[in-house]
Image (cartoon, rainbow, N blue to C red):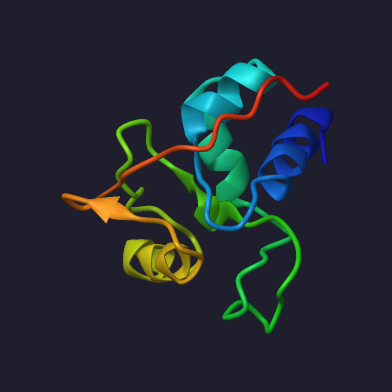
Length: 109
């Protein structure tokens, strides 16, 4: 695994329950584009969702959304319905089908 992927996984692992970040926010911190962030998360070898092989710890890629607050249709671990379900269980609020608020995390070095 390359250091860029590791950096993305490290940032996403630090998103607290009940918070989300956008692919773009993560990309700015790492220095890559949002689509590259999405590709890296799609290959996440450390999924944290409990419905994936019973895991409860790892990289919670369900906490990453599009810049407008919408959910990506390509969410790899159960689709956008499952992603929304997981986020709502963590207390994330939706308005008009989109996440209402984003987590702001400064550059992590």
